[in-house]
Image 1 (cartoon, rainbow over the protein chains, first blue to last red):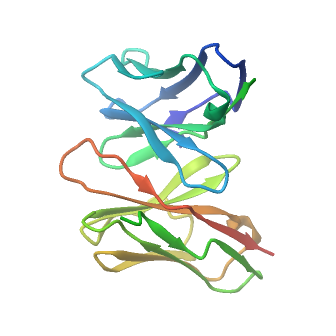
Image 2 (image 1 turned 180 degrees about the vertical axis):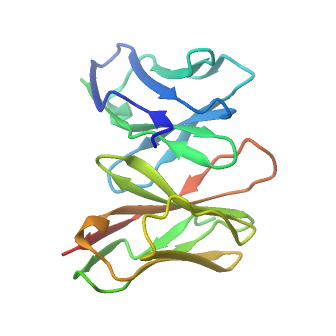
Image 3 (image 1 turned 90 degrees about the horizontal axis):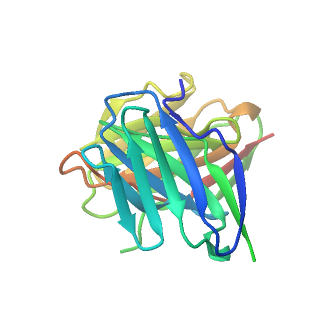
Length: 109
Length: 115
């Protein structure tokens, strides 16, 4: 039962352009949403989060948008850099934390 | 702070053998999560503990899997007997659960291969 879904397994963008990663969830009880970034042979690391009482949170080049009515969130990276190339996991939390399957982002120089 | 420490980093074993994965939490954290990463399902929650007590183990695939927290800073995940389909990367993560919104801190994972 995948409560958090990332339907795009991969995304490729040019350096300097915007990267948009999408995530959908099914459980309306989730009240805190996060994005994690993972490099090969390392554990996921926290990137940015948003509470369900907000619809946008910005941290430098990273912005997370939440659309509760659509049960959808997205991560925008502007401008994208080659060092952003990694797997990005969307996560949603109520009592525990559930993750999506991840999207592999490749930023080409 | 050394972060969440997992051992071993890699484990190769034969089908039927017992496998024990280990995790040391960040000092002061009181919640512990075990996840399994596969291509098909991404990061799959297996079990989580709060203050050493298992809260939800519904993600544990079968009775072959068991997890313990013998003390506040350490946890083990055991698979007995192991099967080839258990091959995956296993992560543990810890957090300080002092409210609702918490971030998890992950270890580097254990790459398990069951032949």
